Image (cartoon, rainbow, N blue to C red):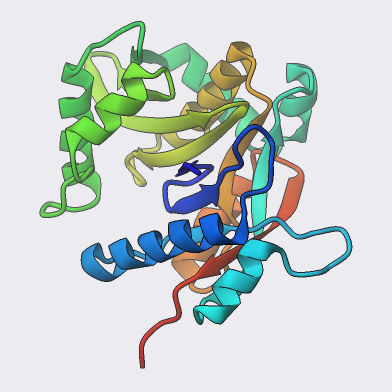
Length: 252
């Protein structure tokens, strides 16, 4: 029973094999292995466990409860890519439309993906990360991890240029018919509409690929910073979906 990434990079979904529900023993083995990895390497992944229509706990849910995991329901901001682009454009915040239109006029975009293996863009993205956010922490733990997604056609890095100058980037990850906004970096005080343009451009490209859903992230009101991020993302969609997860309880 494999497990894979779905949506944001910290979400783990236990997948079925040939459409069949795994046995409780298989769930237990996979879950215990995952918890052992978290104990050794750290991290706080969310384990996806879709709510059942009858409200009863799933086999996975019962396993998580017995192991002391915490139940959590989050509001996911999502874009339905099966809708016509004109509808998606109408659904975004009205103040974003002139900014995106301006971005189309003043920006150019270069891509790192399976068809265009320009790894110099990865180095540019890393430099932008250090410039805008954090001088010490690397953008990704390993370049090899991103390379695997790119090689499989399940990741695209888009670097935004204003003239000859790189001014921002966005990384999207894909699995099946779902795409996810993984990470982006851009200046917050330059007056350039990098943020709305880059995200709208990513949405349109994933739609053109035939993906069905674009995951923007989870609405989070825990702090002013997270509230502002959620507000920005919510301007790109009119759809919220409740999603249920399990997480390891905080110590103490």
